[in-house]
Image (cartoon, rainbow, N blue to C red; front, side, top):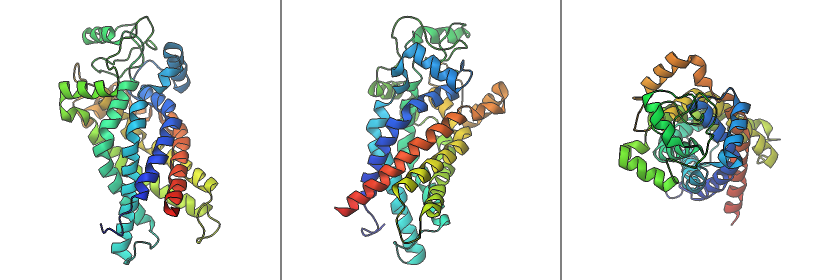
Length: 329
């Protein structure tokens, strides 16, 4: 990548857009994770009501501090790498980095972004999910019950087969006490490193690759198509409303199609070292299918469709407007 092709403003704009999307989308992301990696919830509304009753509104924001802090790096990487890769592809194919990218150019840059982003995104997602799966109940006591057999009164918000964040058949972690496995993001990282080593932070990375390589192609390509359709003419930049709508539609499409791989990723990342249930991606897929049927891979799809729109709408709008601002300086 030449110095002329490489630009930092894309990284800065990605930071702004990413931070905005986390605040907007995290509550529904928590619901999505509980539905995918847990048991005891009948549907999306039942999950929302259960979380609110058992954990209050704070339950929807569990694990948000870590992605909010790390989004500066992750979304900077995604948007910065994607935009710079696209310019390099255009320069190699057409001799000019400013040449309009074709949809195939966008797809290649998107898939490369998905491949690279897992290096940083897998640990961030793992910590976020481990924190989201914690309830206000006495989780540790329930985990030891699960080690010997599923208890009737176990809390419903933890992952299937996980070591100390197990779900119950019952419906939420009630009861007294505020026991938690992890005291916060840093404690979660140190605990995972001690028990599972560095590879523990990348548990579910294979499933994340299956999700993000096609997922980013189905994110940036529809966005480019919708932006083109919503522009009055080719010479003008899209209106902010068009950016918002195109980003939201692209986000819904990407998240809905990525749901099966996202389910597998969530289960692997929520499944920790002690009493581990899944040996890997294939084992997780086969075990989930045998025990819960094909419908398990679409668990949380409605939440993904709903949360994908506002998150991505804010993401792209924040990115594009920030990029215009930085380029005007």
